[in-house]
Image (spheres, rainbow, N blue to C red):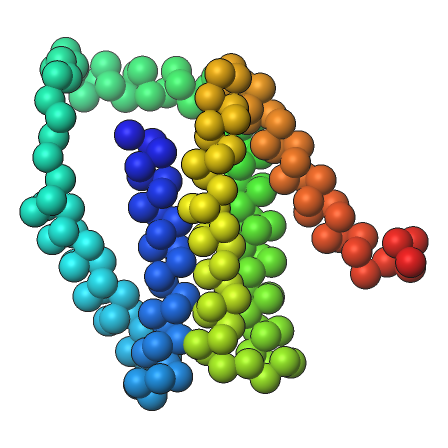
Length: 173
């Protein structure tokens, strides 16, 4: 389930910036047309899922819970220290990640003078690389415990951001 979801998510991450470039630069519709174009593409994706997806079945029904018990169980989950630590770390990572890409887009458009289409292509390469590498990395770590894979991935991500942070420093020269 999750690998399919992640593959579809990053496929859309590849299509989205390129769609923006197509709408703004090639069709000349301007930035205001990007959100309606995105809504149309999401509707098309929904129709494709509804038409093409077949539930494999074989699942058992979860026992029904009343709303009070559901809220109590959810509250117990939220006070789990390990889970909250993971939420904080993940939120920090994605905050830095999106700050980087927001600034990168502005830099490419305003300072480098790239078109929306070219900037969208460059930004979408991240998602394309994830789609391509997911199969190989997934195969290599298929027998690893989940915790090990998550921690090694987090450490590699932190190392990558650290290298980017000092890349413009005179200490690397």
